Image 1 (cartoon, rainbow, N blue to C red):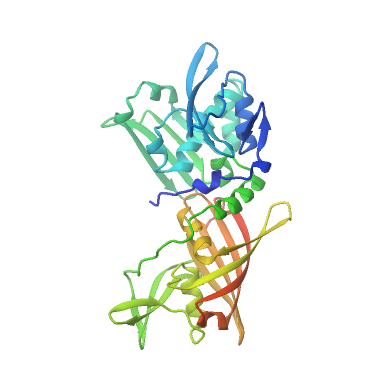
Image 2 (cartoon, rainbow, N blue to C red):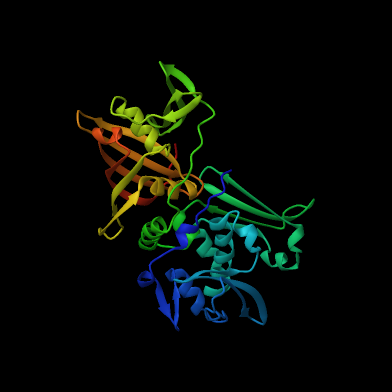
Length: 356
């Protein structure tokens, strides 16, 4: 099970955040929680994490608030320590935030209806977790078809609480499509410049000094995760030249860029039909998606005398979404160490409700 590193989802422009009571919130969901009766949110004092409380009907529950310089990035029941949450940041923060939403935003008669609409179900009593020593807590996260399941237990005992939910990125992140689109471009801009890719272990020889790594396909065999390599002095190098244009594009977009330093002129199409344009290194674009748990699948749409058209699907099955990129690449650029690709992107297309 891949550990989805989705920190970029929590990054948004400050002008796109919500404002209330001298505080910024990175989504409207967080703003609603902060305004709920009994929820106490401290001011930002430079600390990334603050602890507070939620008081309701004579009971007080510990809550955790996380800050970025842009604003409040997370509010939830204080269920898991920070190191544990960072092993699966979206899922465990979802559990903390969603359960606090049910407590704080709705009267006792309504949470079941809300959960039914959201497709969420629980068993057991989450309040029991507050009596469990952190060192003895066991957290099991599994996926089944288009659903995720978190089970909480004490070592060597049956689970005392479980929560099951659809792998919907909007539900899990607490962001609507507009907020998710905003987080994509800002997370991309702030991501590391490059990501080193090791030579695949499953190379097979298919020609005179040509090797391929085949790693499955998405929906149809022509949309594949394959990369090609040549061997020189006992070392394998990713293919990138105009004599093998399709193999080169498949290799580049699967993140085996070698020493190439290409720039992508990216047009990001957002939910409200607006566009954002940004120039970003290809290694940064691919690395950002990979670090967020995506797997690349590439289809060659057209290979002409001068240009190649390709579609890149960055598929995140664990979180139920796909980023789609349409690339237009000059063949001649493949023979150069530097150059520019044109690409259009649509981010966070939901796939959790699709069946293969």
